[in-house]
Length: 287
Image: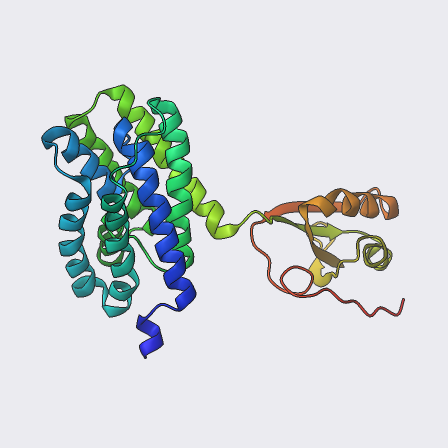
């Protein structure tokens, strides 16, 4: 039961490094250029502009009641996975308050601030943790109103962007929306990784010959799937093969060399586990 509520040493390292990156990014890119990328950090940017309140203290003040809401509404497990990131990020913002802005261009701040903030938050998410803030509200909306989590997060961050009109002009809001988009896409990239693959489905009158050619030329395994043709209602065999992106051209040429009329469907596979990808690849073939 204890492991259910606690983070491992590696998880804690991810949270601290991610919070550090996100905190520094906020201080040198987002805050000095009035970029509101959603969340509690966005609210602190708005209040800093309107009332000159310290952003780190604002984030602390907002995160504490939100952590209480997390504990009551989402349970102990969510609370323990959220508390470190919720407190670490504003702590790093306060600690590095002496840092000067890297740029005074709002476009560059939106691009690079969104990228570095996304990397930091993505590392926190890799630890199955959270930086808290309005993501807690989004989770509560998801839990109790049964809206999709992505929609819930979009609604909450959208309200923060709308609130930014109280302090900033339309152009600043548009730059903020660019930053918010880059943050979300970078988080996805950190979660999924750069090693993308292709999933290939092959229907041919020569399945055995294609399998042999794939084993020999591409050195990848295949899976046989029994199917029934829709037009002639005949039994057929479909081959599924997953390859790294750089191997796809070789696989395509291999298939077409055996059967130029093969029916092939190719889709992107953002993450693949198993032999040849996350495990050592070994084939003992007697062909």
